[in-house]
Length: 250
Image 1 (tube, rainbow, N blue to C red):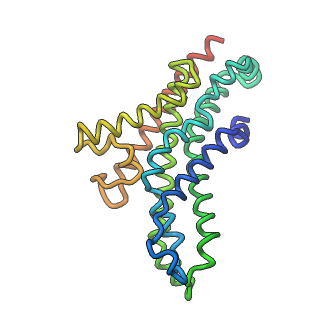
Image 2 (image 1 turned 60 degrees about the vertical axis):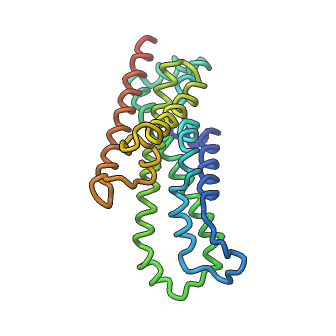
């Protein structure tokens, strides 16, 4: 039920479109664009991979992460549906469903946005590329495709973290505006702290989570993946614990 509501929600659709637009606007087009008769084979994939770590993507990510479902509990409570949902499904099922969907909302919005942007780039650019040997293209572009896929998953994890943070803020403040605004403020506070005061503390820098350059334990950044997964789990569990306290009183 919650999953269906997420897919049909206006916030989810808006977040996907904003994320897709941010990725497309982050594409760095070649300066001699007008004089190029045919793009090199795989240009769409190169543009897509580079755009996934663009500055505009980093800027809009927290806002889009909270749009899909972070305010779900407050909306249900405000509209008077919360008690009927709990009576029909039970407290524990309600909390578990909300924990899963609130965590998945921020993740899925960015994965869908990235896939949509990749499809549009492929659809618009691939027909004009000079591809003499498609098998050679796929063999040579395997690393780029894998790196892009990992970048999509990593960005989705960051979206999940801030989506869960938005749900926690919604319950703490009891305000939809705080659900949207506080994660955005926290995100940019971390950016400011790192850039102005703690330049060596790259692990608190959200831009580093999306486009890593620090020493995370190897070229595939296992330390970063572990850090993001544990941080996401921490917010999921905190959100679930707070939800349980709220619904237990009903």
